[in-house]
Amino acid sequence: MESKTENVETAHLAEPSVFLMDSYIEATKEFKSEGLYPELDLEDRAKNFPSYIEELKLHRTAPPEGLVPMTFFWLVNNNEYIGRVSVRHELNENLLRAGGHIGYDIRPSKRRLGYGKRILELALIEAKKLGIHKVLVTCDSTNIASRKIIESNGGVFENEMSLEEGLPNKLRFWISLT
Ligand SMILES: CC(C)(COP(=O)(O)OP(=O)(O)OC[C@H]1O[C@@H](n2cnc3c(N)ncnc32)[C@H](O)[C@@H]1OP(=O)(O)O)[C@@H](O)C(=O)NCCC(=O)NCCS
Image (cartoon, rainbow, N blue to C red):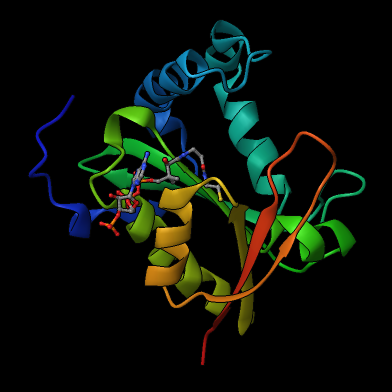
């Protein structure tokens, strides 16, 4: 693990890029080791990286059936992939109920350094550029870190939604961007 003194303030959002492939792959190995993306074949992803990047970019203008347009950004510090965030341009019924406008992940080896707060702060700037003035951000009721991230970025709690049996409830927060 890196030193705890790294400068989170220099982290910025960038468009997904082939130039970040090596650290993206390392980060994804970390996510896989905590059980995420079990189906993802990393060798295959690395082989087809340019088309993966193009696929991500297409979500902005031509999203897959049933999904709203969204923009993906990667959080980068010192030319290294730190995490990812997606900003959905609008809400459909499911997003309004549980998913919200913004979703983010920080790679396991870079957690508890302040990057979670930073990635939402930067994503809100992008949301404003997209013309979203009232942003819905949600988290599982069990996700203490995410709740802190949302509240430290101005999130005002609205309510708690129960989802299907076995899943934690979702907490819904609104952030005004005026
Ligand atoms: C949730 C997540 C984004 C947090 O990222 P992070 O970089 O560790 O967040 P930060 O370092 O900015 O920490 C924010 C706060 O949460 C606290 N925190 C972080 N991880 C924590 C944990 N596992 N348990 C309790 N508190 C935690 C931090 O101490 C900090 O608290 P403070 O405000 O009192 O200082 C990261 O754990 C993650 O990617 N998890 C998996 C995906 C996920 O849950 N995404 C969010 C979906 S809503």
